[in-house]
Image (cartoon, rainbow, N blue to C red; front, side, top):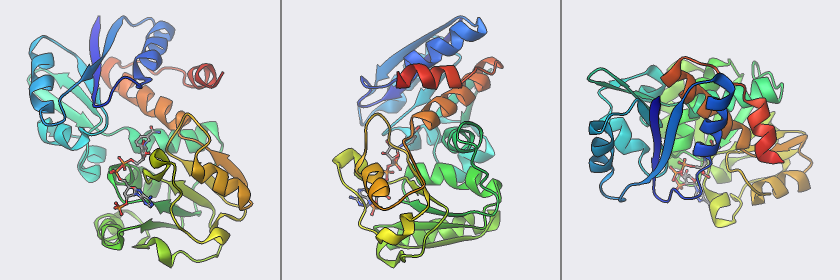
Length: 267
Ligand code: NDP
C-alpha cells in the first residue's frame, strides 16, 4: 500500500485524489491518497508530521511549491531549474523533489493534442511559478523561440537569462507583444483565476494554438482566443492529469493511461 497525499491551501477543490485513485485501479497498485490542508505559514510542520507517520510521497500545490523545494534533500534537474517542487518521493532518508508540471504540459500538447513543438514560436504569458516549471521541458522540444511576456517585465527578463542556456528565449513586458501571429500562446498567468485576461495585442492569436493552464471552465483567455481567430483553444485539464501521471510513475514505477482519465473528468 502506497501512502500518498496532496498538500495545499485551499485544497478542497483538488481533483488529485480522484485522478490517482483511477490510476491505482487501472494499474492494480494499492494506494491511499488524502488531501491535507496545511496552514499557509507552516507547511513544513504538516509535511514533517505526515512523513514521520510513514509515507511514500506526496504532491504539493499552491502555495507550497517553494516550501517543498526547500524541504527536499535531493532535487531532479526539472525541480532545480524550476526552483519549485510539486512532487516528493521518500527514498530511505532522502526526500527527492521533482517538478512534473512542465513535462505534464508537454505530454498533453504532444501526445494528446498531437502538436509538434519543434521549430515553433511559443509565447508564454506570465513569469510566476508555473512558467518556471514549464520553460525547460518546452525548450527541450527545440522550439524556434520561447518568448516570455509578463505584466512585470523584469521577471520575464530574469527568466530569459536563467533559461537562455537551454534554448532561444526572450523576455519582455506584456505591452511589447506585437500583432504578429505566433504558433502557440500559453497563458501561464493567474489572471483567469480573477476572471481577467492579460492586456495584450489581439493579432498574436490569429491562427495560433491557445492553451490556458487554468482548467474547469471557459476562461477569459479561452474566450479571447476564440474571438481573435485562434486555430485551437484548450484548457489545462490534460496537463493536470499528465503531471499527476508522471508523479504516480515516479512513486510506484507504474505508468498509467491518461486518456481515459481525462475523458472521464470531461464527461
Ligand atoms: P504565480 O502567482 O506564481 O504567478 C502569477 C503570474 O500571473 C505572474 O506572472 C503575474 O504577473 C501574472 N498575473 C496575475 N494576474 C494578472 C493579470 N490580471 N494580468 C496579467 N498578468 C497577471 O502563479 P502560478 O505561476 O503558480 O500559476 C499560474 C496559473 O497556472 C494558475 O492559474 C494555476 O492554477 C495554473 N496552473 C495549472 C496547472 C495545471 O496542471 N493545469 C499546474 C500549475 C499551475 P506579475 O509578475 O506581474 O504579478
